[in-house]
Image 1: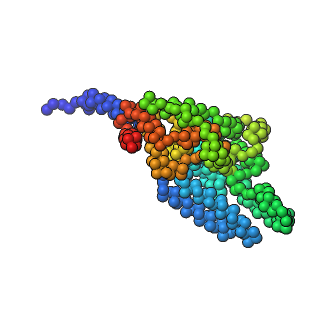
Image 2: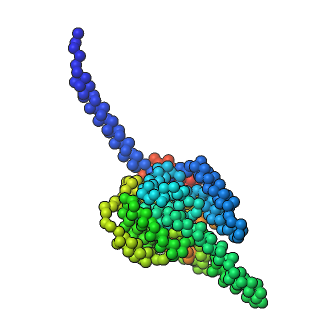
Image 3: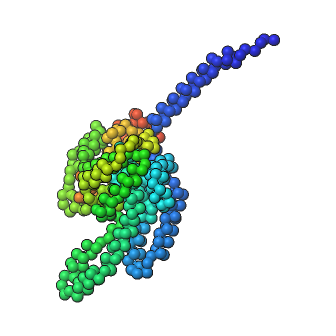
Amino acid sequence: MKPCQPASQTWYPLRIRLLSLVCTITLYMTVQAQNLPYQPAQEDESLLKQLFTQYEAQHKARLASLPTQYRDDYKKIYQSRWENIKARFDDKEIHTDKAAQQYLDELVNEIRQSNPVLMHKDFRCYFSRSSVPNASYIGQGIILINMGLFHRLDNESQAAFVIAHEIAHYLMNHSENAINNYVTRVNSKEIQEELRKIKGSEYGKREQFEKLVKGLTFSNRRHSRDHESEADSVAVALMSNTRFDPQGAVGTLALLDTIDVDRFNTAEALQSAFHSPGYPFQKKWIAKQQGLLGGHAELKEEEPLADSLKTHPDCQLRIQQVQTILAGQAARARQTDVISKSTFNKLRQEFRYEMVAHTYKANNYTRSLYLTILVLKENPADPWLITHAGNLFNAMYDAQKAHTLGRSIDLPAPGYASSYNLVLQFVQNLHREDMAAIGYHFLGRHQATLTAYAPFKEAYSKSAQIVKE
C-alpha cells in the first residue's frame, strides 16, 4: 500500500493556484465595482411614510395644546410651519439612504453623548437633497443638513459645527420664542391702536396697512441676528466637549462668507459640453433676450434661507465672535475628523449626483441641467452624467412638444445666481428641434465608449427617434 503523502506536499501547488485565482477575481471585481456608473439611492417610501405620520401626529398634538388666548394667531403660524415640513416629505427631499443616515447619526451622537444636556432631547437630523448651501431647524425637532452645503465642507469638524449650530436653535427654542413674541406684539395695545387709526383714516388706508403689516410679517424660517450669534456660541460650547476641533466653526463661517460668490463659467461649460461637429454650439443660445418675455424680470428664490447659518449678521463679524470664544479655551488635542474621513469624502461626492437626480425627479429640468454641467465639467466621461444629460434633453423635448415645459423649468430672475440664470436663458432660447439635435449629437459623441452601458443605449435610442420626428 502506497503511503499517504502529507497534505502540504499534495495540495500545496493547487492551494497556491486557487489562492492566486481568488485574489485575481477579487481584484477584478473591486476594479469593476469602482468603475461602475453611479446609481442614485433608492427612496425608502415606507420610512418616509412612517416619519410623516409620526411628525403629523406631533403637529396635531401641538395644535391641541395651544393656549386659548390668541389661539387663532398661534394656530395660523404653527399650521404654516407644518406646511413647510410637509412639503419636505411631499417633495421626497428627506434622504432615506441607510448608510448615509447611519453616518449622520454617528456625527450627531458624538455631539449628543458628549453633552449631557442633549441626552434626552427629542431632535433628529436628516440629510436634505436640496442644492441650496444651507442647514436649518424647521421645527418639531427636525434638523436638515442640505447636500448643497455638506458637499462643500472640508472635514467632519465643519460638519459638526453645522449640526451643532442647528441643535442650538432647537435647544434655545428660538423658533417657538419668535412665534410667541410675534403673537404678543401683533395683539399688543400699540399695534391694535395703529390698526384702529388706519381703519378710521379717510385716505391711504391700504398704504398704511401694508406698511404696518410689512414690519410685522412673521417668518418661521428666519432667525434674528441675536439668535444667530447665540447659536454660534452654543454650537462652539457643544463642540468643545467633543473630540471635534472647534476651529471647524471658523472654517465653516469662512466658507459661508464666500459661498454665494458666483465663479462658475456657465457659457464655457455649456459650449464645452454641448458643442458637436454635427451640430455646433450657437452663441445665440446663450444671448440674453430683452422685452416682455425675456430678461431677468421676475424675482424668485428656490428656497428661503430658513433658520440658516447664512442669516445675518455677516460671517466676518461672527468669525470674530467665535475666535474670541475659542481664544479663551484651554488648549487640548483635537481631531479634524473623528468618525470616518473616507465616508465623509464618499458622501460629499455622492451628494453631487444625488442632487442632480433629485431635481430631475422633482420635475425641475433646468436646476438638474445646471447641477449636471457643474459635475460634468469635472467628470466629462462619466457614463451616468452623460446619460442623464441626454435624458434631460429628451425630456425637455417631450415637454415642449406637449406644451408643458413651463411646468418643469425656472425662469430667469434677479434672485438667482448669474451662472444659473444663463442656463435658464439657454433653455429659453432653444427651439424644440434644437433640444432634439443637441441631445442626439451630444450622446452620439460618446456612443463608441458607452455602447455597452444599457441606460445610455436606451437614452440614445430615444434621442435618435426624437431627432427624426
